Length: 143
Image (cartoon, rainbow, N blue to C red; front, side, top):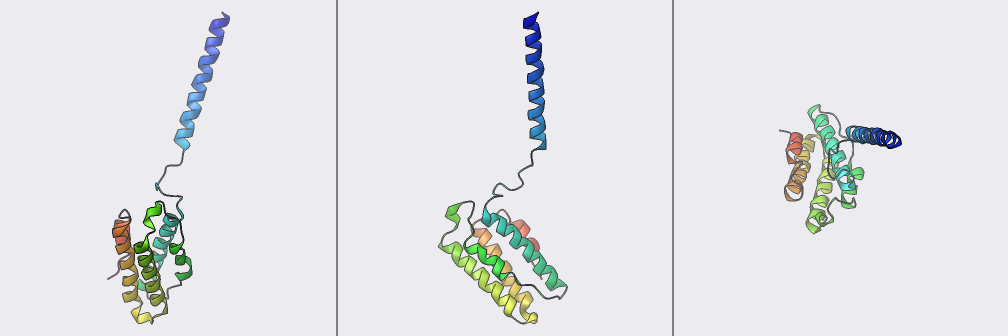
């Protein structure tokens, strides 16, 4: 009788522990981005949102706020894959920052054409290093 009772308790405990594991798995937050913790990946997501704001401002013929200081971090942010930060990446990042600076400094009439240069830097870099977001980046294009 004692063996049956111990077996029953063991069975109940193991069933409840399995249920707890199932709950933990169900409540786990899905990983939307495999590189979600890399500072460069986080910065790139913010840069995308900033570019969306720029695009909307240009379409509404509103002033564009400055993003240059924030985007400077592209030169120092740690990437998911350290091999990405090579000399070519740095040159593209510097070109991007310079085109962003020129857009911010230029007359309003030229901002749309200068935005296109900033956009093209994004696209070119992602064609070289990280093609995954290209489809999303194309949403930033303006005519």
